[in-house]
Length: 416
Ligand SMILES: Nc1ncnc2c1ncn2[C@@H]1O[C@H](COP(=O)(O)OP(=O)(O)O)[C@@H](O)[C@H]1O
Ligand SMILES: [Mg+2]
Image 1: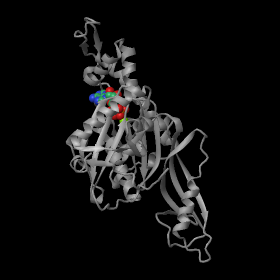
Image 2: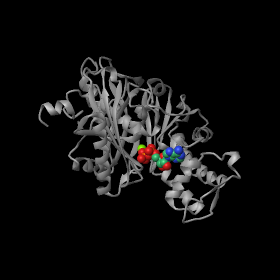
Image 3: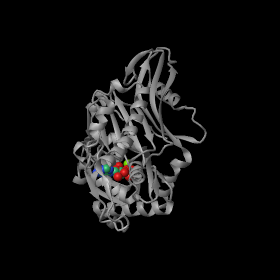
Image 4: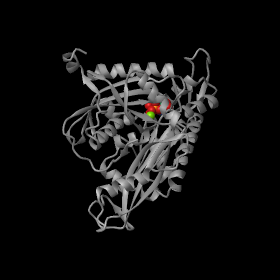
């Protein structure tokens, strides 16, 4: 477990190559990024494969998932012209939980000056968490320190005090279920530099400092899971995962319209809407090109009603959870959507009605490079994993575990 510090950005000296891997429910995606000075990320390659071995964000068929990951890696290697040895891996699933914890430590030195050792100790204390025995920690993210009750201290070193406290956000998951994707990656002779919750990764890709400061909710609408993260005052306050996503919308449509699932997915992409389009209310579309259901027509209004109900329910579950955490009023920069579901027409309108806040679709604005990755909201997680990797590299620059990627030209020199 590595403590994660996602605060103000600093510079790394040399540019390095970092790879992000998301084994998603609809697609496996590998992003290769070059991280230069001042943490700027330049995407130099993307590899993708349709995901066949994942449901609700978790692997259900190792052999299929392995093949899909291998294909995506090979494609990314070709595009970026690198040999990938290790990846930052996104993890998700209904077992992944986020919660806050506080560490407390008395300052023992005679002069009461807080030292680096005190800070280490209070953080160690915050990490001593009573998790269920089958859970393990994914992240312990530092939020703020408190010194003798003084709130919002960013770095207490050198201050005077009798008691330091630190608030942290913890993400944990079931050990075995976290190990499944790690083992799969290792089985492909790739190392895992570190794992990150996909929700956290997506938020890193699309939020700037100002949005984190003002307060923003990021929602990643994937195929099998919907993940979310709340930032306020520059730090992560809350994360969550719902095991509901675009696949459920398609399922509802298949059931409600009495069409095969693949057909429902296509109808959703072609005619879907998050709110009922008044013009579509009585419009019908034919399914005549489908030999199994000749002459069938579906009512667009009915179809959009089914879709909007499921999407609204999903967003309301998030609103309820954020409300329970008392965070709605902290979202001064509103809600940002990403993931494939952010492409659903009028999804921002539906979300605006649910949250009563401004809503926008997220763009990975702090990266440059392969245009595709920047424009499409469904690449937020892999791109964010690169940013996560860059933060980790900065936090522990001499850890040998990062960026084990060899440029092909260099590899050739060493006879690889
Ligand atoms: N234009 C669209 N309209 C409706 N749903 C869409 C659209 N584009 C993508 N989706 C949905 O987004 C989901 C895929 O999102 P993505 O973030 O790539 O998933 P994952 O990360 O889980 O693999 C699928 O359920 C897909 O149907
Ligand atoms: Mg995803």
